[in-house]
Length: 541
Figure 1 (tube, rainbow, N blue to C red):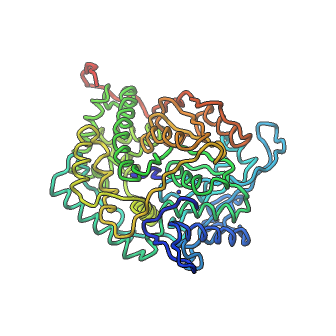
Figure 2 (cartoon, rainbow, N blue to C red):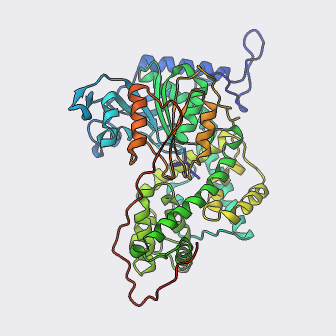
Figure 3 (cartoon, rainbow, N blue to C red):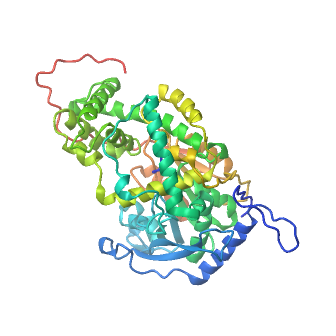
């Protein structure tokens, strides 16, 4: 499942890069060619800079956002070989602090952002400077985002025809039959084969180590001597790889909602942990719905809400809403609510309205969007390529079946859908990378800021604890009891205060700190109509 989101020189070890012998005949250390190639690409980028102009979709964007491209090698071991282009977006620092009457503040350089995925684009990130929560940072920094390699418009990857990507309504069994598993294995094999056929040899070069190297080239192209970077979700992982590969190039780094970086967790075990965490998050959502039974009428306990969800799923299996929304689309819609609290009122309303006879809100929120099919297919292709290329995966389905059958007994909500998302990695033909063991000792890296929600499901909290242990001098700020994925620049003033103190002043708490959770979302919609309904006793969930 995406860390989204989804969601990288010294020490780089590539299983796929065989050390070549230099003129003297002695073998090179693994990764030496990639290190040299990165240095060559960065020097070229620094000399070329970025010619910013109109953005590809300029008609829909404010004029302050300007775009340009940075050229990087497809294969860093061959910097003079095939080149690809990354599209970069930038909004210049305003220089005016809105909290000080518009007082002029000095520019601190570029703040480069990645939103995660893998497969998400940060190209439009600079527009967050228009939001009140970001204006102080936008005063001091050029806000910069980019589309990583493979993400449109940066030489996009594709694994299948986008017209075939949007599937019709289907089941979402929490305990799938053997026959259903065979069907999904066939689909996974075909998808992996499609990735290889449509992308060719380029496919092997889409991985997190290269994303970290690309970030180094973007830094150079921007003319920044040292990098100020903020990564969310998957962005924390290749940001951590960057910190390991290029520690002397780091100025400040923010890791928001952290992927567990231990090599043995990349990515199979991280997905198991995510499925378990989403069960807790689904319970949080049902508890909130039950607390607002007067609005939604879906039950007064989480268990009752679960029964209404199962009732809706059974109905949709018989007759999909609008011919497009079946149990799988319903499950996906509610799973997305596990990422962001602010989706809860809308998702609860859609489920409630459907069960009361109005399917339109459900169709609107869970139905397919053909106009976005190409973008969705591209994001899926990049997600799959990066995760499959990044490390080892079980190649025997019996391992997947054993592990996830056990897990589904206690965490049924997401487990098997997560399997189907990642199963192409079992049949991947491109070579795998060896995950880097990220560790920095005292003084090797400037102090960094880690942000995490205690009940985040997409990137469970233990990932933040692990990264803090691995990056000497890092400080963790926790949003207690909160589960929204991505905590910076949003609804928690305490978190934003720590973020601003660090990015604007280089100031961190003396030790790990915590913030009270953001306010719970308010329900929307009219009170539930209970005419003719017998009062139900409250029961323990």
